[in-house]
Amino acid sequence: MSYVKTWATNEKLNKTELKKLEKDGLEIFEDIPAYAKNGFDSIPKEEWDLFKWAGLYLQRPKESGYFMMRVKVPSGVLNYEQIKALAGISKDYGRSIFDITTRQAIQFHWLTIEQIPDILERLQKVGLSTAGACGDITRNIIGNPLAGIDRDELFDTTPVVKEVFDYFERNEDFSNLPRKYKISISASIHNAGHAEINDVAFVPAIKELNGEIVKGFHVKVGGGLSAAPHLAQTLDVFVKKERVKDVAIGITTIFRDFGYREKRHRARLKFLVADWGVEKFKEKLLEYTGPLPEKGEEQTKDWNAGYFYGVHPQKQEGLNYIGFNVPVGRLDADEVFEIAEISKKYGNGEIRTCNSQNFIIPNVPNENVEALLNEKIFERITINPPKFTAYSVSCTGIEFCNLALVETKEKMRRVAEYLDKHVAIDVPVRIHMTGCPNSCGQRQIADIGVQGIKMKSKDKRMVEAFEIYVGGTLHDGGKFNEKLKGKVESSHLEPVLKDLLTYVAATKLPGESFYDYVNRVGIAPLQTELDHILGNLVESVSY
Image: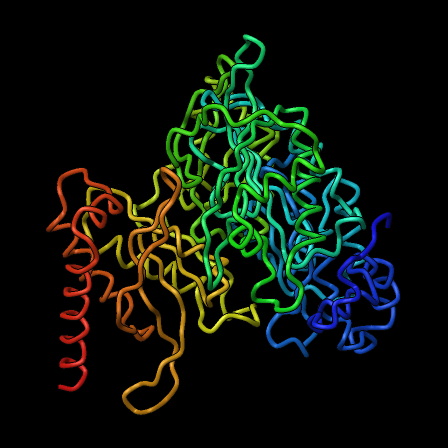
């Protein structure tokens, strides 16, 4: 460690910060072998949270000693050996559950402390890491899963992502941040990196410098979701590709040294940016980086929400990438093994994970496309999924997560399946389900966001329920969805959404997107319709 913890003398530090002053989170890696040898009961309870720095959370209930593990996958790019290693870990230790997250990472469940050393060794052998996948540290760097093959990218961001990722990997100068810290780096003109909801996002831009048009980045700072969502704001700087690491270090240093550490719920970078404003933030950044050109012309054209279904030509002549749907992001280990072999047989052995919880098989020659698509596994995992299944996202939920209030993963799958059977609509409708206000399911950016709560039933029991939000997007700078009044008991969610969407389908314009519809009519008609639906539901239940 080569920096001074300037905040160490702050008498108002929260308990987590005081603990981090005693022991850096990354030091948990040194303790894992002994804990694995002596069993879960040997781990002091006050050490449980430190496992986050190793990408590990204790599942619900914590006392049972089972861990969830996240594995970082920068930009979602995995090679054949990595895919096989991940599938093997899932099969051998994780009850064959293989989840793709909304940050392009891979998530396992049901791991025990005794298994962790072997898992970490397997990951290290194939160049994968869990360090910083959770905790107050730089998380997985997300980006364009089509990096290097995308006809619509300004340039290939693969080397840029690798340079930044490698710098922060297990870097103890930046392992004690005020809270989690999320970076996005993408040169996709379709905002594949979800720029506006990241702490820091590098987005494609051009600028004329010395008479030459230079391709590089603009920088957005201060995005994030949870209970107090903020959209990232653009700094007035232009960053050449070779300066991205310097700028990332500068911004991360500002967050480390000036971010708030008194109250955990106000410790994200978004609160510092909101209080300082982008002009002051830029001035401080230039103290670390030296002069940077003013911003140029951003090249983002629209937002694809991380969806790439179907067969698409790559920038490399004769090659294609193929986008598949994974319902709510959950695969079985045997499916992953089979996908790995298929990707090697028909492509180059790669798969690319998407922040929509889906995946892509790239580098498939024209002559191999038909044979690949005829593989039996692609009946469930398909390039042409039913409309609602295709655009459904879910967090982990109460099945494993200690923060969740409701079950989400299977619930979202059933909701989508039900809507596919009962609702006809001419445009995709993105539905995101999250089990608590922390919003791992990213409900704020969905057409329809569904957030889990607890409510009293008619017989005064506390039951699982949901609140409904409408009209979210990250197009054109972004807009978070708005809450409709009313609580929907979990058992009634499917018919309520069916009736609401049937109303939308009957009142929207042909080809009008859900977001454009809400933007045109406002939420008042939807609120009136939801009130009507819930009123009928109460009468029906009473009867």
